[in-house]
Image (spheres, rainbow, N blue to C red):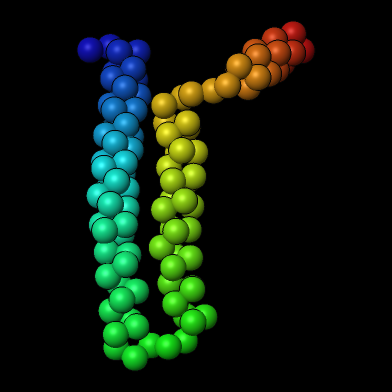
Length: 105
């Protein structure tokens, strides 16, 4: 295997590993959020049954159970766009213009 093929292999291997990790992250996200959704009501009931009457705390718990999946999902989308190399047309055109600009210099 010559040097060029070795570099391509290493780059491809790294990309496959990143994609594999990304897909594993999606699976964990789905499982954890399904569990959170299933146990959300039970968890709040647990706290109220054990004497927690602080409505501020209960509201905080409920908001966290909503915001964690949302924030995690947004981060997952950003990582997915990066790893899957999904670029909107605007960015692709901008990159092409910049490449031509710097190649002409």
